[in-house]
Length: 208
Image 1 (cartoon, one colour):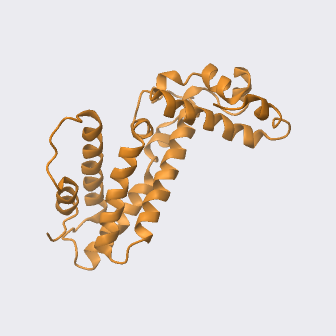
Image 2 (cartoon, helix red, strand yellow):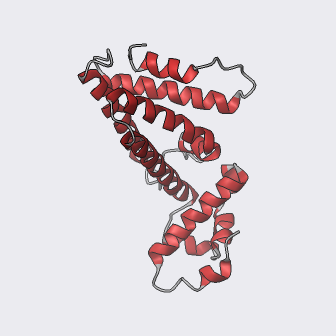
């Protein structure tokens, strides 16, 4: 639980920190409840140790807070994927490491992952709204960029048969996302041994 007393001592002249604390409070609530519906302005403010109206100096509404939460999650995932890639020394190993790190992140952060990809928080996109179509369309660009670069490197070195790494990286991501989603929603399914390898090899155009 957040120590509201200690938070209260950090308010004066620290607007940037308060914004971070609001987002952190939302992340904590999401992790604890696993339900975006529990993240109301009032519940987030209570966790952050502030009055609900204080939020409006930093966020227009609840979807704006959720967008910040999701952006933070994508930044975290980007770091995970980049770290995985840096620990390899061949193009194929990089592509495989990034793909497996993606699946591991989805498995170990199920509530956060679900929210990242269009959970209940996604608002109706209306003119003048706090969240725009561009906000949503650019989420995950860095993650996809890492996957695309790795696949392009495989193609350039003859490891992959891909002739269009940008399009094939999207196809690979769709496969990874589908597997991650199905694992979370159909846990009793008897997944074949080596399903991750089959998926990455096939969609990445890699030699078996």
